[in-house]
Image 1: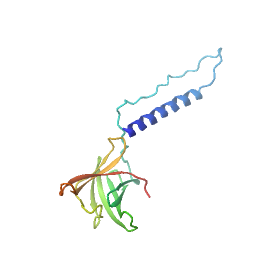
Image 2: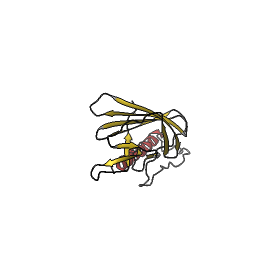
Image 3: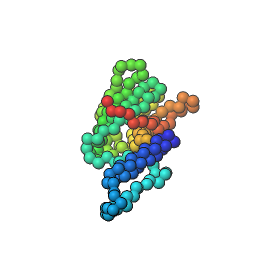
Image 4: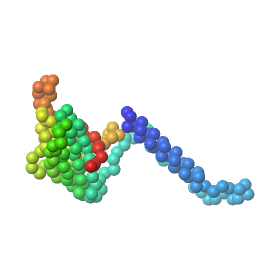
Amino acid sequence: MQPQTTFKTLITATLALFIISCNSAKKDKDANDKPADTAAVTTPTLPVDTPYTTPKMEGANQQKCFGNEGLKYETVITLNYTSATEVAGTVTSQEMGSSKKDIAKFTGKADGGKLNITFEGKKPIVGDASEWTSKPWTIDNKSGKEKLLIVFNAKNFETNKWADTDYEFDVVNCK
């Protein structure tokens, strides 16, 4: 719930600044002056439960980066939108405590919040018991924070069984 509270605070502060700036822009009026012809200023309000949504990518050269620190590997995914429906990027995987990086390039198609990705060659390691699937990646922003969800075939160490598992990648600064 922290992101919603932060978002509400941000909206409230923005509206307060808007009202203050409108009031400070008005000229002082003398009692004998005719009031200027002004339209009533209305401040738009958002419903309290309105979820944050990221604007859709429209056009080329937009970049987003997502990261996940797993149990053994840190993975950073860089998405470059080459058009409204085309993406290209890299997955950089690095074992914790090591300086060796495994980098794989990919291309893909964006369709709404889904990304259909194809790797160019070998897929990087993201964990000892995790395997890439061909399922689409999903960009989710329901919780007020954008996340990249990727389905992996992963081993559950408690049950010792393999199953499709969503890994969450949070927004990180692109390097």
